Image (cartoon, rainbow, N blue to C red; front, side, top):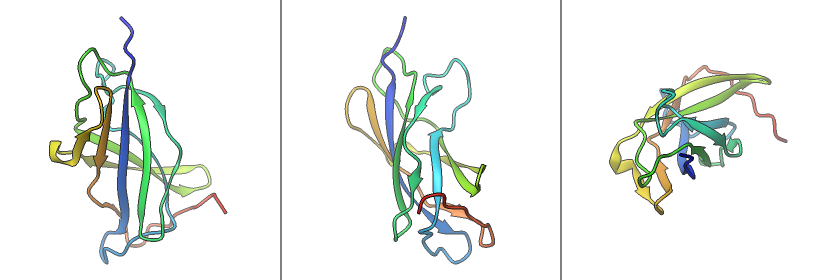
Length: 128
C-alpha cells in the first residue's frame, strides 16, 4: 500500500559551541535522522536549503514515506551543514515529543534545540 507521506517542518538555530553566539552565515540541508529502510521516517524529499537569518534562526522541511496512521515524532533530525562548496557535515539532533507539534494528520512542526557548530569550524555559504 502506498502512503501519502508525512511533511515535517523544522525550525531551529545555529550557534557557536563555546560562545553560544548565533551564526548568521550558515546553510544546511535538513532531513530525517532515521535511516532504517522500514521506518515511516524514510526520506522521500528534502525542502529548500535552510539559510540562517541574522539571529541564527532557520526554517526548512522534509517529507518521509509515512504510514497509515497520523504523523509521529522522529527520534532525530539531521542537519547537513555546508562546510565547503560541495562538502557537508552532519549534525544529528535528538528530538523529544515536547519539541514537536502536530499541524495535521500528515504534518508536524519540530522546533530543534540549538545546533552547535564548532568554534573553529569554517562554514561555506553559496548564496550571495
